[in-house]
Length: 88
Image 1: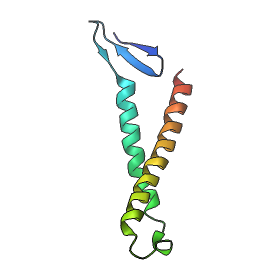
Image 2: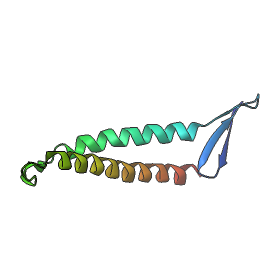
Image 3: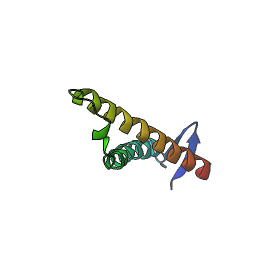
């Protein structure tokens, strides 16, 4: 039999033999990776070439990656917080 044990922000499934699996950490990792992919896809539809200055492609690529990660962090944090409210 399995029992879900909430410990702080993490949820563990404790097996009968005493082993502990960190399910919430795996869910968290998958959520962040999925959010990065979705944010990259969503931001790629915007035509940023209009805002790009000449000879500034490297800086733009850095900004684009930072915007993808920032949006992914916000989306994943919302999803994980919503999950925690629904579970807890």
